[in-house]
Structure formats: structure tokens, C-alpha cells
Length: 308
Image (cartoon, rainbow, N blue to C red; front, side, top):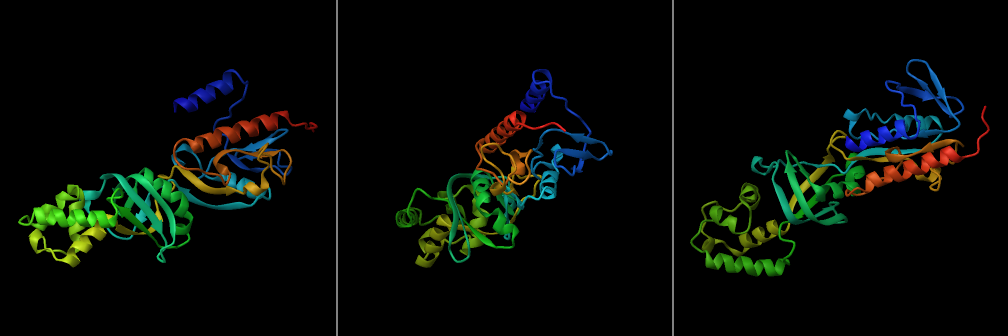
């Protein structure tokens, strides 16, 4: 909000820009140099910039109207999907895990045939039938469109990414030998935070009160597999109200990257999230907005146009 107010103040005080409030746009004018408002009024200029944002954060008033306006002007608009967003799971998440954060874990997302679409390391959290957090947001950029088109994908969480399976197995053998009289339910805390124990018990199918010196080789290998690969089936994403950005938009092939002017309609410009342009978390999407906005504004203000 502070950045928003600073930009508004700069526009009004230093740049002599008139800001029209409660002036919803209905459509473009026939010459694509102006807009018709919902109240019937028409605004015209020497150039027009469509910088209406995407579908994310609808509470800010972002409705995605820019996509429709671009299509009215003859532009190709790439399918929109939520991005930098949580990923929905088929399997239920135990209540103990909802809101719990895992740090320093590995995450990969793959098709059922094993083809990897994303691989990363960092922090993630669990929601109600979803996974979230910085690592998952990054993954969503690579898989959101596939999920929205009906594909089922697999998320693989490596709880011990610093250890190879071979090294971890040797450690498990040593731990089982050193703690032989402890019962399995209690001993899981040797390798897992308490919040993950209910999920492990559900997935491993090992008797709760079995002593560690009774764990057989097959059971130890199931424990090893769980520590290296907690698997969830992904079936969708969070909605636009939770998405940081919208993926998709006006095709970049139809926009001059040096000026942000339409290649189809002279005098029409695009900036920001309405474009088919997005990036990872870390301020990159704000940079896209500022850079394309500056370029479009400067280019439109300095182009040679004969006034009608």
C-alpha cells in the first residue's frame, strides 16, 4: 500500500496526471485509441496503454478485463492459470501437519511416467489437502497449466536431501541397533518431527508398538523410502485469490519488446501482468511490472502521432 500511494502521489503532484476514479471501462473505441466507459462516456488519446493486471488478487479490483480488450484489438491471448500458488493434493493431509513448515527439504514434481518437471530445495508448508510455501510456489510455475488442463502429477518430498539413500540406510541400521528396545511409534522421533509421525504411521503400515529390534529388512526399506520420498498426487492449484501472479496473457510474439507497442495496432501498448510474462518469486514480477510500465509509458509519450 505504501508503494501504491507513493506512485499515486508522484503521478498527481509531479507528472500532472489526472486519475479518474469509479470509471470502469466497457470496451475499446473502434480506432483502438480510446475506451468507452460503463456510464457511456468515451475517452480518447494519441495512444492507449492496457495495464490492467491479471486475474490474481481480485480484491484489488483486478478482473482480467485487459485480456478481453486485447482480444477486441485482434491479439492472441494465451490461456490464463494461477501461478506462484499452492498445489492441491488428492490425498488428505493429517490435521497435525496443516500449517506445519518443513525446512531444508527437496521437492520434485513429475509425471506418472517419471519425467521430472521441477526439482528444488528449500522450505514448504502443508495445508488442508494442499502443499504450499516458497518451494511449492516455484514448482507451480512449471506445472500449473498442466494441472489445470487435467493432468495428474506426483510431488516427491525428500525429507533427508543431504543424505544419499545408501548413507541414510546405514544410519537407520545403526539407529535400529542402538535403540532396539524402543517401540516404533516413539522411535520415529529419531528421524522425524512429531508432526510427521501420524503420516508416517499411516503410510508405513508398521505396528505402532513393535520394538525396533523386531523391525525386519522390508520394513526398514519402507521407512527409508518414506524418508527419501513422501509422495502426494497433485490434482490442481489454489485459486486466483491466493495466487501471486497470473500465468498467460497477451502473446509476446505480438508486442514489440523495445517499446511494448502492439505489432498489430499502432498506438496500442501493453504493460505488466496482462502480458504472457511471469517469473519466480523474489521481486522479479514487480520488476517486470515496473520495467514494462516504464517502457510503455515512455514509448507512448514520445511517439510521433498526428492528432485528430
